[in-house]
Image 1: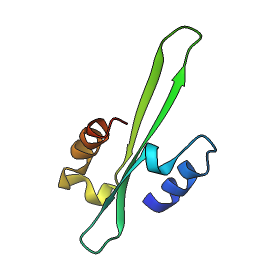
Image 2: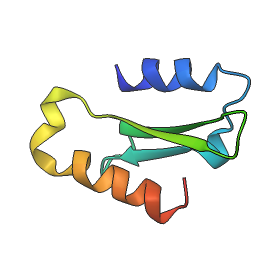
Image 3: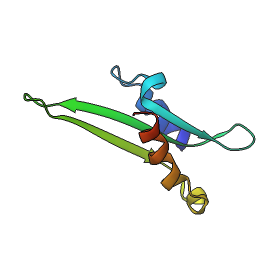
Image 4: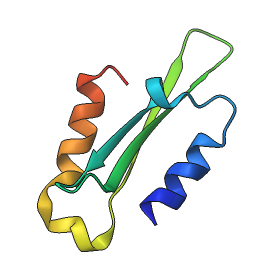
Length: 77
């Protein structure tokens, strides 16, 4: 499910994976969660930044849901 959602996010023309995504890998290198960032600007000077994280329910007790948004902020996403 994580991979399907990541592919859907990448399918957006405005989405740049190098700039707008953080992918969490397990020890085997499999993608287990991801975060994406979208921005929108109003007519004025307000810019809205939305951080979205996707963590499968089976991985919910590993702290990924807390660490992923923090990492996105650290990266300036």
